[in-house]
Image (tube, rainbow, N blue to C red; front, side, top):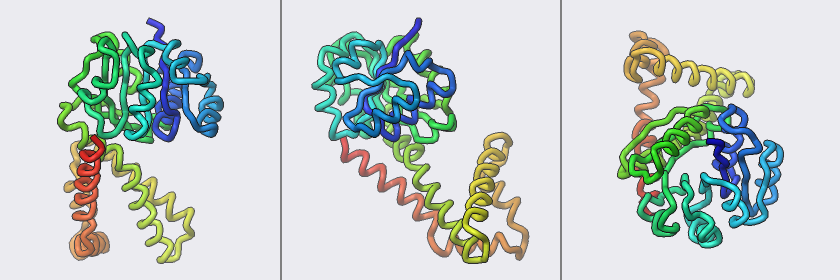
Length: 265
């Protein structure tokens, strides 16, 4: 079936998904329409070759699958504007904190729902997506949507009760990783490296380490142990990290974000 995707909200995340799907061939640009209040966001859609709708209702009338990509506080208003336009359609929601039950309560009875938690690396086909097992879309729609997201990243089906954990983990990691990259690059600069050189070395080393763990049987502890020579430089660095409470800080970041996600429901 030649599906048509409508994207409500073409901001950072909606734009990353929409642009990523088109760039990586999951959909032709002509199969996608976007709506956003922001002129800048609409401009980004146009740059990607994606048409824009003048209203939410107009967007819904021209598609069979809708990606809901708005902030939780904006979702009720947007869904009210969509109204009966979502009847009989599959609604893919990336609204943080909104579970399937909450979303369904704001939709026509015959609308079908799939909750997805994405992250921004989808723009470069390196995303990580958690898809809720508590979906009401058809098997055919489920397969189609899984195929789409698989072109721009890793897809994991998880129980609905764990979707908030996915939200704060894969959704937040780009921000946490950016802080780690910035801090390590600062360390390199302090030791005399030029910042662009330090940043490239950090980024490539992190990318390579992630690929090594993904493509081999090495776990995080294994990789750390392999690099830490007795009485060497790296084990001293690890000791400093543990002394500063970096590990605990990262765990607390996930817990704090999870608590905030619960508040958004």
